Image 1 (cartoon, one colour):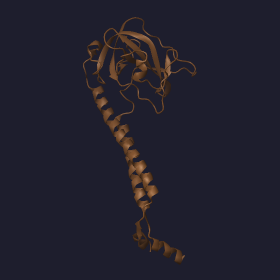
Image 2 (cartoon, one colour; image 1 turned 45 degrees about the vertical axis):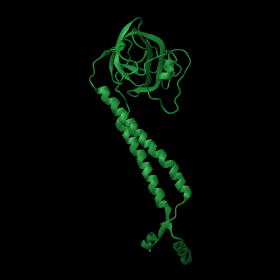
Image 3 (cartoon, one colour; image 1 turned 135 degrees about the horizontal axis):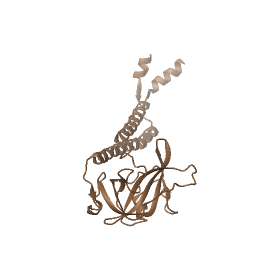
Image 4 (cartoon, helix red, strand yellow; image 1 turned 30 degrees about the horizontal axis):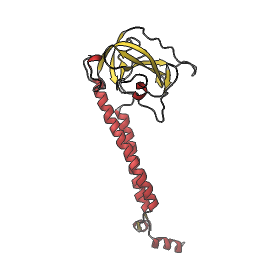
Amino acid sequence: MTEARRNNRTWQPDWRLWVFCGLLLPVLLGLAGWQLQRAAYKQQQLDLWQQGQETRPWGTLDATGLVTGQAVTVDGVYAEPTWLLDNRTRDGVAGYEVLTLFAPVSGVPVVVNRGWVPAPAMRSQLPVLPQPAGQVRVTGRLSPYPEPPVLARTSVSGAWPRRVQTLTRAAAQAESSGVAALVLRLADSGQPGAFRADWTPDRMGPQTHYGYAVQWLALAIVLLLLTVRASFRPSPTESNNDHTHG
């Protein structure tokens, strides 16, 4: 009897269900594709970062052709604008990454990521940030501006240093026009003006994005399978027979 009922199921799609599937399926596939693109991009950046490259003077680089991972040396002075990138942890301790505008002797201005500092106990307090006076030479590698979290906003006003959830190039350009398209991460904690600079290129590597892509793709497949399965229903004759025998 069970086998007969299974064979008597016919294709009876519900247009409302298929409209829902048609709207949601492209979104899930799009998210999977976007995560794959992010994974490929992160892998490319990681490969560039790990390559042993010659350290080049900042003034000799073309500002329009900067490459992530390039090692550079810059002579200049730290400027006043300093952003505290919020919600950064080290060893389970909350803190900030310190990004300061740097005015080079030669070349375009650049934002320097000086490393991590712990946050004070009170949220209303900001960390004390000693800054070298006069001209210094710093060495580091170029990296993208920090990725913003969802719905993050960049503060555009206030005293320095300024606490922010993210920092875009546009926000940096509001303080210094022509600022470089990439950030300079100091090579180590021994650099002038550095704090704790013991980071890796990116904490969210390509494998994480591949995992997210698989999850979105799996959801898309499950959605399609469930929609197809729900479109096969018992035939009207079978339903009437069930009511009659009941």
